[in-house]
View 1 (cartoon, rainbow, N blue to C red):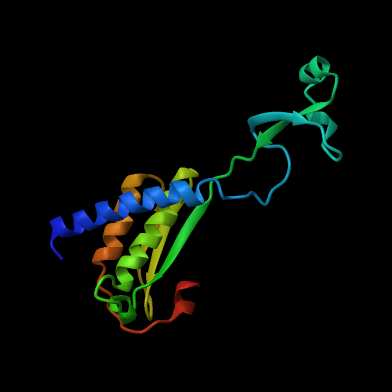
View 2: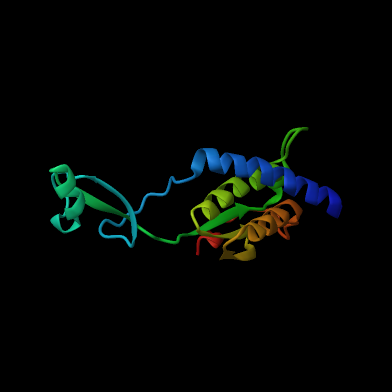
Amino acid sequence: METSELLKRVRHIEIKARGLSQNIFAGQYHSAFKGRGMIFSEVREYQYGDDVRDIDWKVTARYNRPYVKVYEEERELTVMLIIDVSRSLTFGSSTMIKQDMVAEIAATLAFSAILNNDKIGVIFFSEEVEKFIPPRKGSKHILYIIREILGFKPKNKGTEISVALR
């Protein structure tokens, strides 16, 4: 594939994926950790079970009802995409092959991750791990990942997912 054609495809996928990630996935991560976060989020009315240490006494005095401060959990996740690059990646229809679809899905997930300030990395595998892209942040890193997916030529033809999950 020529460089100009590759860049055109990357740009098309970027535009499509940014729209999808902003409309569908943004803000969908929920923390498994309960408790006191570091970033103040809002003040809301006290509910049974809330920690009394979170009561905002100034707002409570103003409205004559108890209000609590709510904090947002600040966590940075590392998202790893594990992509099967076996021979079946070239299968598809006259309009799209699996490799193009994988690039679009990966881009959508990756742009969603950077909207949440997360890192994104990739493992390409077939019968062995063929390439590892370490997790990083930023749009440039995602564009690099998309280029790698679209231009990747695997060494092996088969699939062995257990190798990638080690």
